[in-house]
Amino acid sequence: MASSAPPLKFPNSVSSSTKKRRKFSDLPSIAPTGKNWRPSTVVVAGINGHPQINGSGALRVAFQGAPGAYSEFAAKTASPACTTIPCRAFADAIDAVERGRADRAILPVESTMEGTALRNYDLLLRHDLRIVQEINLFVHYCLLAMPGVRPGELRRVISHPMALAHCGRALSHLGLRREPVEDTAGAVEMLRSNHLLDTAAIASPRAAVLYGLDVLAHGLQDESWNVTRFLLLSKTPTGPPQEPAGAGLKTSLVIAHRGGSMMVLLKVLSAFSKRNINLTKLEVINSSNEGEAPVMILDVRGRGSLRAFPHVLYVDFEGSTEESKVKEAIDEISSFSVFVRILGCYTADTNVYDLQ
Ligand SMILES: O=C(O)C(=O)Cc1ccccc1
Image 1 (cartoon, rainbow, N blue to C red):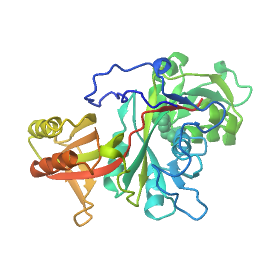
Image 2 (image 1 turned 60 degrees about the vertical axis):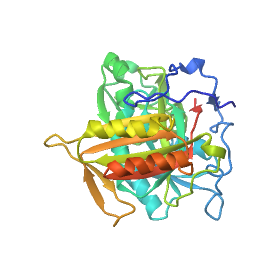
Image 3 (image 1 turned 90 degrees about the vertical axis):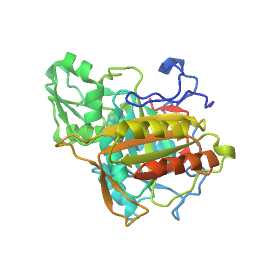
């Protein structure tokens, strides 16, 4: 399917693109998966054209949650032939990669409704893993209950905090007490195994089928345009994908410093703009007020120690670390920032995958 969608615009992200955000129904590049789990547009062989890793040929991807979680769908979208490894927490998924029990970890990092999931970005910064792929997944939420339960019998709803937040208006309307749990599919599993008749879960339609629950409502999200961006992380650097002049590639950086935050921001923007490098994300974190925790970043080049910074910029831009203008921009930024780390260089995902 065509891959001509404009860059996604996430709230709280500053994009240099002036293109208008388009509605789901307008987008030509939606890759619907139908009832068939895998979007036909995704290349089956390996990640970014890199060879599959383990003997059986299947990439092992660790994700947070029970089978049927959105992160698992995202992993299957990235690499349809992969074996997925459920983990209790995102930190466990990262740990699985660090210890070699998995080849990749998958992490939701931002959504069109909520912006950047800073806790997950924090995790990324504390570990030495590289971003090797991004996946944009259209997230549909359903209200699920035990078979035969009617809406009037429900008192509370459980789900992942992001799902509860994305469905805030609908849940207020239903008057259900909200309780966060680790993940959406885990919530469904909890209903099933504890035979909870007064509790609903928010999860995907696939989780309903997987665990045999009734779908009481579809499309529960407050906004119809609800896309989550996931990153696939690897321990082994795969190197920038080989594309002529960095075409279709994206690089993610973290820039950290200790003071003069506006000045640094302006200088960073200037380093990119004078080289015509298009930013696709800019997130500014300031935690210099008393009582605010600094951002902890693993210094992968130095002694491998964690360093604390009050001012951090997350920057994604179009281009590859192999391009000379990108190297120059990074060198210039390194000359006035305390710390710069390349989080990954990978193929930009211009599709939005729809798993319904
Ligand atoms: O809980 C899940 O299913 C996840 O994979 C995390 C999540 C939750 C809501 C939207 C996207 C990802």
